[in-house]
Structure formats: C-alpha cells, structure tokens
Amino acid sequence: MADKELEQGLEELESVKQTFKSNINAKGVSTSNIEFRDYPSLLNQMEKVLPKQIVTISPTTSEQSVMADVGYKLEQVKVNAVTSDIDSNIQSKNIKQGISILGVQGSLVQSSGSPKFGELVEGKIQTIEEADLSEVAIIRDGVFEGLTTLKSVAIPSNVTTIGDSAFSGCIGITELSFAEGVQTIGDSAFSGINTITLTIPASVTEIGASAFANSSLTEITMAGTIPPTIGENALPDSVTAIYVIYGAYDDYVSSWIAYADKIVRLPAIPSTITVTVNNYLGELVSGASVTITGNGQTYTGTTNDNGVFTQGDLQPATYTISVADLDGFKTPDTQDVVVEEDTQNSVTITYLEMPAFVVDPVFANNSPAVISQVSALISSNNMTSAEVEATYGWKVGDTTSYTHSDGEPIQIRITDFNHDDKSDGTGKAGINLEMTHCLRTLYAINSNTNILSFSDSDMNKTHLPNIKTLIPQEWQDVMVKVNKKCAIYGNQSSVNTISTDLFLISETEMFGTTQATGFRPLAEGSQYAYWVGKSATDRDKKDTDGVIRRTWFRTMLSSNSKQYLTGLQGNTSAYYMNYTAGVSYAFCV
Image (cartoon, rainbow, N blue to C red; front, side):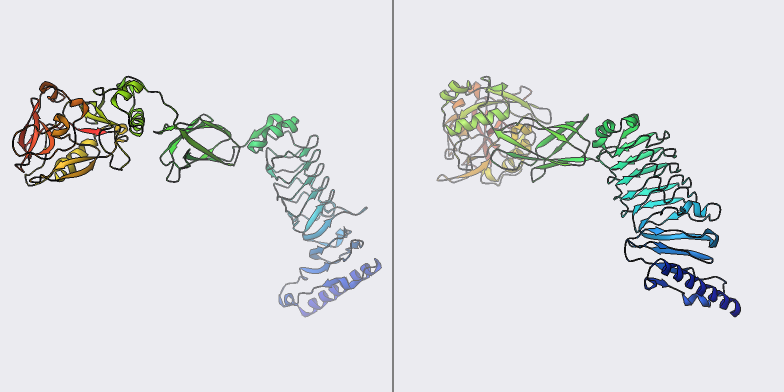
C-alpha cells in the first residue's frame, strides 16, 4: 500500500481510538481496562485494509455498562464481557459490510432502547451465519430475534438458559444442537427455525410455550428419562415422531398428553443375565444345562468351568430361568427375573439335596440314575438280598434292557448285592449286573499266546473299553470300578488284582469252584448269588440272534499259558486265547 494511504489509514485509526476513549470516559469507565491492538505485522501486507480486530472491551464489574460506539470500517469486533451486560448501541452506518460477531463472554443482552442484532444487520449485513456462544451462560430474551442470516447454532454446555424469543424468526437456522447442560428453553425461543431433526438433552427441565412453533421440525429425540415440563403449542404440527428412551415411554405419554400419539419408544439398550449354578454343598456346577425364556425367545447354554452361563442381548421383560436334571440332586424350581433396560442381572441357582426318591418295584421301570441311588443305599446299609427285596421289591435275577449305539439290543440282570469290593475302598458295590446273553461279535482274549495273566490281555486293555463306549451314556455314568482277581500262569500262591468297571466273570464267580480236572488256578473271587444251584442249561449263553456260543471267562488255564476257559453247554473247557469266542460282560453300580 502507498505510504500516503497507509499514513492516512493510521491517522483514521488513531482518531477512532481517541473518539472511543472519550465515549468511554464519558461513561465513567477507566480506559485502563481497554486494550487496543494494532497488529503491526499486518502493516507489511500490501492490502488497503485496517487490522481485522482492533478493540477488546473488558469491563471489570457487573455494574458497568459499556457503550461501544465503534467507528470507521471495522471488519470484526470482539467483545469480552466477563459479567457485565453489553449495551450494543453500535451505529450501523459505520459498520463495514462483512462484520461477524466472534464471541461474547458473560450475558449477552439488550439494554432498553438498544437495537437488536437482527435490526442492526437487516438489509446491511448478510454474513452473520454462526453464533459463537462458547462463553455465554444465559442467552437473554430476543438477542438474536429476526437474525435471518444465522444458519448454524450449537448451544454449548456452558449455556443453562435460553431466553424467550432468543432465536425467534431466525428462519435461516437449519442446524441446531444442544449440549448437555441446557436447562430452560424459553417461550418462542426457536419459533420459525428450519431445522428438521433435533435432540433435546436430558438436562432440559422446561420447554416454554411455542418454543418451536411454526418451525420445520419433523422428528425430535428426547435424551432424558424424566419428561420436561412443556408449554402450550411448544412443538409444531409438522412433528411426526418424538423418540423417547424405552423405559421413559409411559411417563412421556402421561406427561405430554397433547403429543401422546406422536411419542415413539426407542429400542431398549440390551441387558444381560448371568446365571451361576451350584449345589447344596456349595460346589460350582460346570456343564449344567441352562434355559432362559422370555419376550418370546428361548436361550440355552451350559455353564463354564466356573459354573457360570451368561446371556446377553436381552430386551426388557420377565425371563424364566431353569436348569436341567442333574444326577444325584433334586432339580431346583425355576426362577423369574424382571430385566430392565441396560442392566446386568445376576441369578444363582442351587441344586438341592436329593430327597427320598420314588422307586418302582419293577426293576426294569427304573432309570440308571435311580438304580445307582438305590445301589448306594444298599451298599451304605450293607443290605442283604432279602432286605433289598423287602424294601424296594428288587431281587436277584431281575432284568432290564438297553440298546448299544450300534443297534444291538442288550439285556442285563441282577446277579448279586454287595458282592464286589469298590476300588476306592469305600465298601461294596451295591448291585452286580451281567448280560443274560453274549454279543454277536466274537473276540479273542489276545492276538497272540504269550501273555501270563488276563490283566495284560487285549480283552482287558482294548476290547472291553471299546465295548463300553457302545453302552448308553446314562449307564456308563453310573458304573463304579471294582477289584477283580486274575490268575497268573504257573503261580498257585497269588493272583493279580485289577481295577475295572467292565469285566468278564471268572470260572469261580459262576461255578463257585474250579470245574475241570487238572492243574487249576486259585479261586478268582466268589460265586454270585444268581449262579448258585443253576443247571447246565441255565448256564448256556446265546448271542442276540439266539445262537448258543462258547463264551469267555477271564480265567487262564494254569497248566497251559496259551489257553483260557470258556463256557459251553453249561460247562467249562479250555480254548486257545487267540481264538474268538463270545463276550458276556458284567459291571457294578
């Protein structure tokens, strides 16, 4: 810029400063609180403009009222009023086109007789599009009323009150937002604006009459759970939906009667139910099957190693929680849980002590679990066969049936009570069971003939464990391990003892003694009650197809390490161990 023009500009600026100071002094305000900034760096720019911001007014007490008689061609005015009201008596004839209000600290008001911002700029200024309210606590009545050039208004958290008609008639506003913190929206505060959607924060407690009347609002979201008081005709007819938090729906409908038909319940924030399962002994139960029903849905799962199952994504409703039967315990009653929105719900379900249970006197009509429970009582009370029959109606020779997983039908019978020693040393196994027939598949005791005891055989180590997997799980679950004696080839002074839950009976357990002549092993156990006094015909074993089969004992012929005894036509005979014969297994519960 030419030196002469710059010099003239600076002289004009100095004149503005002096005129401003005079006006301020006339008001009784010390000029020591007024700072003028010339921004010298701008003097080097080759533009014929005055500094963009030249005055900052900072009154120090709430009693002072400052008249800003700003002079010549200022582009931007920043007014910082800490607590005072500002009398904005700005002569519009001296405001350069393009002015913008950068910010106002404190309470932005209009003193009596002073023009409003809308009146100042109407027809002269067309560039005030945003209102910076970052330092405003209270927006007084009518401050921006009629300011049609405003397009975007963001009410920050520092604003608590929006006065009556504060933005009334600001038809250019298409973007309006409220931060949490605003409490009161005055009468006609935003009447006539052109915002379409709006979220009103939970902090708002009062919405004045006609607050949004004649606006373009169609959808409003209420963030609070407590409905604000609302004045008459606060919302325009254009509103089609007022979205409210799920749990607040009923309160809004009853409080905002005039708008009840437009209130829409928002989807609830999902909740969770955590189920902990234990038993009456205080032990956590893993693998328990849990079912949760409610709100038209059913959820299932199993507890983890800590006895816990958690189900999320639940809508508010009453849910019924149940657990499946657990062997040895009484299944607890179902529990109902009322689930609210966005909540964490915890439930503990306890399996109860099994009460006196109902036993069917017909052995075959009882489940494996009941048979196991009765067996435990038979064992703990050291009951005789006569006592068992008198108490439960069961007797030696009673049968029941199940089917192997490969489809083969199996029948088993009671052969004795309190006969075999349990491997854990807790006494006798209450009930002994044995197949009434033999399997249709034939097996060898061992693939070769060089073992010296049944304990080392393929039958003991491989075949019987594999056969066990075919038995229904509910029967496998109630089997108990017992000690079984096994002869050793060439040894007449001792026998092996194995711990097993599925076994072959010995020669002695059927006949009560050794039957064949010649060098025989020591007795491998004692005779089962069922086999006492039975005839040769009774001792025959048929397979599931009705064919009489040679059937293995676990007894080795002591005079020949290559042979084991088999039952055939009611008697015993030697048979090479690598030959195949029938298997009729036994077990205890």
